Image 1 (cartoon, helix red, strand yellow):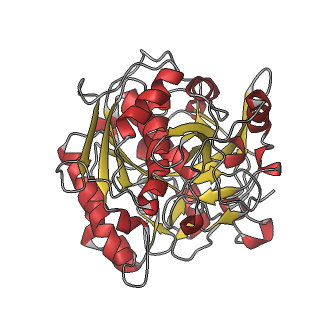
Image 2: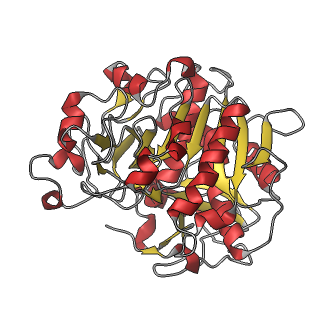
Amino acid sequence: MFAVKIAAAALLLAPHVAVFPDVTALHHLVQSGSLLASHGVVATCDVCDSEVVTVAQGSLVPLATPVPIGYSAAELAAAYHLPDASVGSSGTVAIIDGGGYPDVESDLAHYRTEFGLSPCTSASGCFKVVDYQGGPPLQPSGSEEEKQLSAETALDVEMVSAACPSCKILLVQAPAADFYLSALHPAAAAVPSIAKAASVALGLGASAVSMSFGYPSTKDIDTGSVSSVFSHPGVAFVASSGDSGYLGTVHGFWPQNLPSVVSVGGTALYQSDTAFSSAAWNQAGSGCESDLPPAHGQPTSVSAFCSGHRAATDVSAIADPATGVAVYDSYGIGGWFVAGGTSAAAPFIAAMFARAGHTATVDGPSTLYSAPATAFTDVSSGQNGAAHSCQTSAPQLCVSGPGWDGPTGIGTPNGLAGF
């Protein structure tokens, strides 16, 4: 069932946390993928790839609860066969997001405490916030738009925590205005701030950079100097593939369409009494970028689906809000909420790159494609568009099956071996 996605600008922030008598039942709905049978979703912002579950279908009010009902950090670790929290590198994951967020460190602490993760604080050097020019954190404005963006930021930093509890987290804040496009402030005016933020992340030693958004791409943006910052072997640039389903062979979204960026698709994640299983999320982004060559390391057998051009996506993780993750945000939402979108998948994958400790050899998604097949779990069911909407010669662009496909790429992580 396709969820109704309401315009982000209409998101109404709940003034109080709603109390529900049976949060266990709500968690079971997440595990079975049934949450949206009686709840809706709303996008966080114009360019964000995150969706917040709402109290009812058609509602604009987030489903805020006093305790988490989405997937926990431990459940995500079990789903993707991650080792003990003490195992792995402690690289730095940079998150590029929008607007001021005065409670981000305390909200992160709340999440980590709830799920038994070690503290990550600014005092210890584990957590750092700067603006997109490398200066002090952006001063919060208290605007509704900024508070909406806090839900995106909370999702990002908390998914990094779930995937790599020992990683350092660097939050780089771009202006909130860049996440709300208009005729007076189109993508071409916004993307320089994002590129500048990426440069700051590089300068501060990030081993992976996560970007949970997508700007409408043009040839000028894709091939212009503003995109050159992402051509930086040794750093994993990771971006969400988008929440708009199959986009065909027209221009998609920047920066996930760039050959040097890992494009992360999305799945639904189901949990039974004995195991987890995944299927392609029906809104995960995929398609072809006709202006650009294949992704770095992308086999010709994959790029052939796009006539030799960049085929999205490369890899995937949890994204379906019907099987969403638990997130805590006191600034905007006012408590625990359930979130999805490929914005959940991108920071999770970026953190796995940093945790594996092999980013010195990373050049776009090349190491993913050269990893052993056992490093990923193939996702062979589900689709993000009607089969007839794909190219007739390449239904793999929107229908999942054995091997690479558009919605899920080469599959979902099976431990750290693929990173």
